[in-house]
Length: 334
Image (cartoon, rainbow, N blue to C red; front, side):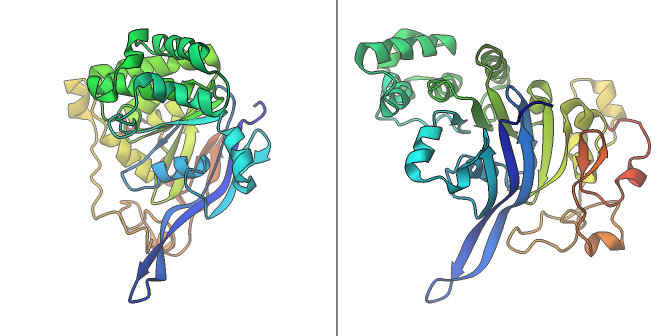
């Protein structure tokens, strides 16, 4: 294990809920509730889970697009949570984001050249003709043409718009890119092209990724490790193949059982796990293990005591009291 590029320690983001005549805070939405992980240079970590589990909020809090409630985000040895605005602006050159919606994340009143070139101007890297040349080179690298610089976002397809978003994130040659559902709004064939593009860019520029997704087939293909989130917490984290082939948490097992397989016979033989009940409210999460209200293996202890995220085998962490007993068999769920 080498030097860490990013270390997230007990990151918390709670949103206040106001009500009443004086709009007083009466509770909090516990969107992210104490997650921890690390990331090495050139590594790709996938963060998966159901909608509303806190994945996107965690990504934005790491970049301080929203301010964390508490915790540490250490980037190259510096805790960025305590940085002032000017110091944070300088650090933005090293940390970028690809947004989920390629239709909403691009300013419709700006040309592609202005969108991609804006970071170069803000950080005083290039201006005028030099900036245009750099923008043209970046667009070509992501599969677009230099003449696209003069067009507006509405003139492009969804896949092309996402490429523009990738070009904008790539303009400053960052060390870390957080990709928030980068292909979920795209057709399947375009998804493959964008995923392959991200992999090629990582090999060429040495970028580390945090890929936020609900699609396990996507993260298994591109990621080195996978972190599974449920109701604001990480319940399992391990190597990508290990999580997919040998999950050690009941929630991970259920997620994997829902993934489609392009093989009729394998689909027929596959064990499908149906989770009963709804996801509890993050305003009032259940005591003990947060998954126990839907877990098919729950016992009395699960409703009382919160399980710690512990290492079962080398590099494989899970938050389940009975992981050894439940998953004692080496057979794969998928």
